[in-house]
Image (cartoon, rainbow, N blue to C red; front, side, top):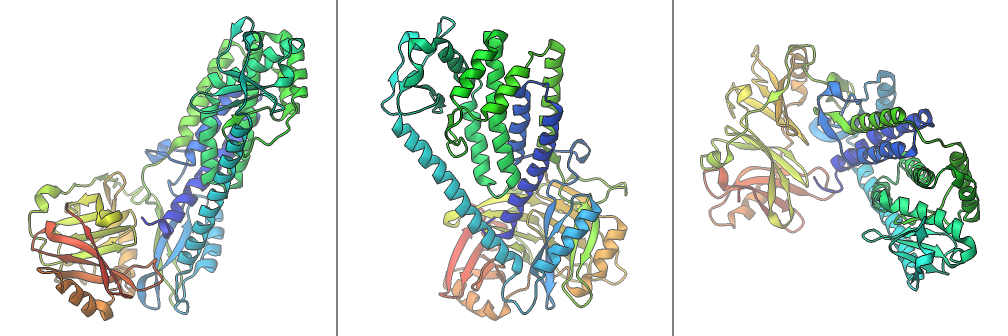
Amino acid sequence: MSLFDVGTMTELLNRSLTGGVVILVVLALRLMMRRFPRKYVCILWLAAFGRLLFSIPVPAASSLFPAAEPLQQAAVEVDGRPGMGTVLQLSTGLEPVDSAVNELLWQLLEPSPATSADPVQIYAFAFQWLWLGGMAVLLLTGLFRYGLLKRRVSDAVPAEETQCTVRGKRLERVYITDRIQMPMVLGIWKPRILLPSACSGEGRKEERELILAHEQAHRLRYDHVTKVFVFGVLVIHWFNPLAWAAFLLYCRDVEMACDEKVMEWLGEESRKPYSLALLRFEEERSALLIPLAFGESSARERIRHILNYRKPGSWMTALALLLAALAAGLFLMAPDGKAQDAVSIIGGADGPTSIFLAGKVGEGDGEEKIPAAVLDLEKAKKEAYGAAAELDWVSGGKISLHGSFGYLSFLLKANGKSELAAAFTLEEAGPIVVQGDRYTEVVGGRDSALVVTEPYKEDGDSRIFWYLEDGGTVEPLPEDMTNLFLEQSSSGVFLDAPLAEEYRQQVEEKIAEIPGNHLVYGPVEIPETDSIICGFLAADGPDLEDLWYGIWYEMDGRIEKYVLFP
């Protein structure tokens, strides 16, 4: 997958959408858990930030989400050329929401023969440049402010033993400096507690012990590490307002969790002096853009929490821990399948047409996804690839191809290398026929493939199989969906990406310059590029391992060769 293709954008937006839902749930739970210790709420926040980055595949029945990826992309026909356009579709399981959003998306992103570029590709390119720019600004600003702070306190001196004790116990790595007005924890691997010179005197011993206890709570909880993590997630999802809200509330809850820890260590008699100490160190800087330092924030809310806080009993502690652990686990789970249970035909008879799957394919029809037979590549690559090997999916970062041997998918890497993403025999669909009346159609996708038996034979016993690369599963589609697909065959739904025949001779001549090589399939224009760039299959021998993928640049006739079978 290339950085600036639609797949990258939709994957990022899907992470942000599902993570945003989790954040909303945590906000609701936070209100319900007012009497629970804040350390358990912090667990929920960490799960929400984790959901913005990754998910744990589980059966759909075990997940809170109806779809692992609510935002899907689908190829559409433009001006009689199938696969030349792209649309985005939302599938959350909430029909009124999906219908309204999808209608708006279609109006905004409808591809047209009059435009030279796919609107979705344009938006994806612009969005990802904006996204990268926002990440760079936020990250560099945070690092700059952190570096400035470290330089500012570089002359901090180690505190004397009498200045770094709490109830007679000496704390390690405590420093005094006159360059700050508030205490803080600074650093990641060996975090230091920094105290303002103003609170180092003997007259403020009680106040100093309370503040030291709070900062030590940060270190023992490893907040200096988790805050780096959540700030890093915020940098990635800076465009999501819910991520900002989660970050700010997480910072508040972390501070209150440490306040609770101080109350447990020093007893309830410390409530009043501790509250007065917080008032003295009322926030003077923003914690938002200094992600690696902990200082005091939201003093008013924290004081109210301290005055109302009561240490929970053992039963409430156990209940809170159980609820937090269960909720955090559920937040990280996502359905293991990306196929869905409703089919929508986008566009009309006179306009672009595409087929979009929403929900779980085959549900209610008695047919479940099963593990697909894996191609023994070591054996297969020593055999002839047969009468034909066809490209099914071509993009700047990934290709898929098939032949009588089965189906292969590769990720394109730097320096002409590739990485195998999937290898199926396709034996569930029966013998793969690459020509004649019993021809088998294979339609590749970004992370899946459709295999259609005898799609063009009149009155043929056609069946459709849905292969998912993630998890390596296959599922036969029900008869009604098969018929719906077959009805669209005349409009070219099952045609491969259109071959750029006008460039075939030039590509063949260029390949002929490489001794012993010949063109096998292509050229196929790579859709996310503005200039004319084509992908093709070539070979320097008769066996599968002799195949290689090439990219041809019309501008200078240059060819990039990608080794598929090292």
